[in-house]
Image (cartoon, rainbow, N blue to C red; front, side, top):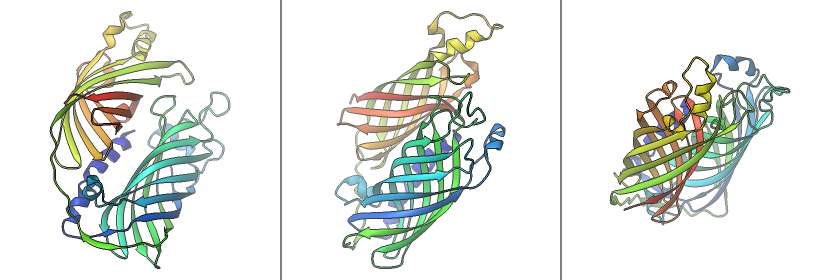
Length: 371
């Protein structure tokens, strides 16, 4: 799960580059749709010793994409050098038909340009969606799959790609990719399937494209600081696999401020509860029996970074516990969340909490902006 932290920090870092580059470069404005197809080849990253037996052959597959160039009408379009949102369908042979089978994902993504020229484009992509694993862990039929315990999973991907124009509407493209299937501890095992790789493909523009050269004009409007409150219930499973599902809960209040058109920084207070903690604690007969569930309430304080794409945003938080009687958690926690702002006051959130490389639970929340 540590890769998710890397992706979030990369998203935050690279999110600053398009504006910096666009201040000196000429931007291309190309309204319309594009379709593309890519052939992938890669391998499963065996990040735990008990996964080594799952890696047998290369991962191979294809990816089909449909995206649309943003118009520049909204302020965040210019802040990110006019990115392209899209939808993709990925299908991979995971190189182990007996224990892993295939991985298929339907996902949304955003292509964020770093360099845009008439015949050359360099950009990076972040995407997330739903992933299906055809042969997950099963206690009787597939007990050697130590990587993932559910058919339906979350899917996430990042890539860096270069495109070269070869005809009026056609481009050849190639790049590096990283794909991940995970269920965020909704079921165990949940080591996840990590797939670094390379690819090559073709990119075709649908319809007549009008290209307008235009200097980027990003207006740096710093909006007011505000407070957010959010309640987020969740669910998780603990070993042994196939056991009971446990409820989790999280409430936070956060003060946040825009530091530019794209980013907010915040400081917040968290309250956590995980119903599995009392069960796991009392399984150990050498420990003192705990009957009060309130003993496992956790308090923490976090720093937050939010990258804003209009109504959508990607949030990474890193916190430290002020009170936590579950010593195996360690002192540090992280939360990775996507938010959708329904209006200026109300927002929805979906994400997960981790302790470094260990996912704790998935959660879905609803929040409110106080000021």
